[in-house]
Amino acid sequence: MLSVGESAHQVTAKNIVLATNAYTSKLGYFKNQVVPIHVQTAVTPPLTASQLESLERTSDIPYYDDRSVLYHLVFTPDQRIVIGGGSAEYCWRNDLEYCGDLSKISTLMLNELKRIYPSLADVQFEDTWDGVIGITMDGMPTVGVMGDHKNIYYGLAYNGQGVTLSFVFGQVIAALANDKNHAWLDTPYAHNTLPFMPGEPYRWIGATAMTGYYAWQDRK
Image 1 (cartoon, rainbow, N blue to C red):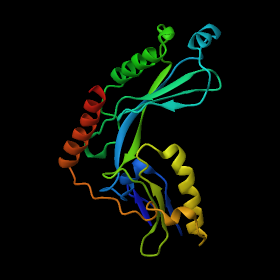
Image 2 (cartoon, rainbow, N blue to C red; image 1 turned 120 degrees about the horizontal axis):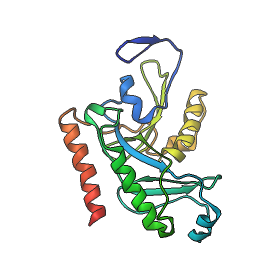
Image 3 (cartoon, rainbow, N blue to C red; image 1 turned 90 degrees about the vertical axis):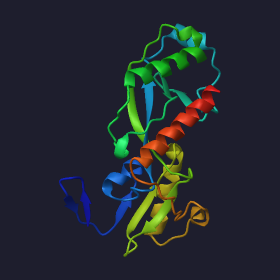
C-alpha cells in the first residue's frame, strides 16, 4: 500500500515500480538519498533556411561541453535548436517548484547559444522551462528491488544521465520482475546503497555549496 501526498490517497498493488527519479522523495522513498536539482532548457522557433546555412554545421548529432555545469544542444527534426544547462539549483526541502529566476537563466542560455553560433544574434527563445534531475552524494545511480516482500522495484538517481540510462534500468527491472538474469545486475549499480544526506538546513547548505563550487570551477 502506498500513501501519496498530504491528502494520503492510497493505492494498493501487488508490485510497485519507482521510476520517478528526482520526484521519488515526495513518495516517501529515498528521501534521504536522492535530491532534486533544478535545471533548465529552452527552444528556438524553427530556423530559416538562411539561418541554417549560416551555421555551417556538418552533423545533427547532439553534443555537450566538458564543464561541470555543462551545456547540451540538439537540433530537432523541424530545425529548432534545443539548448539546456549552465545552471543547477537546489530549492529548500527538496521543493519541486522552481524557486529561481527563469528569465535570468533563459538569458544565460541564450547568450551561450549566440556565443556558439554568432550568426544567430537576432534569435530569441520560443519557450524556456525548468525540470529536476535526481542527484546523489556519490554521483551513482541505483537499480534493484527492495521491501519486506521484495516487490518494490526501482531505477533512479541518474545524476543527469537518465535519458539513456533509464531505458537500460527499465530492462533490468523487467528482468528482476520476471526472475531473469541481466548483465547489469553484476555491476556496482545493482542494489547500490546510496549515501545518506542530512536534512535541512544542512542539505540546503551542502547542495548550494556544491552547485556554487561547480559554477566557480567553470568560471575559472
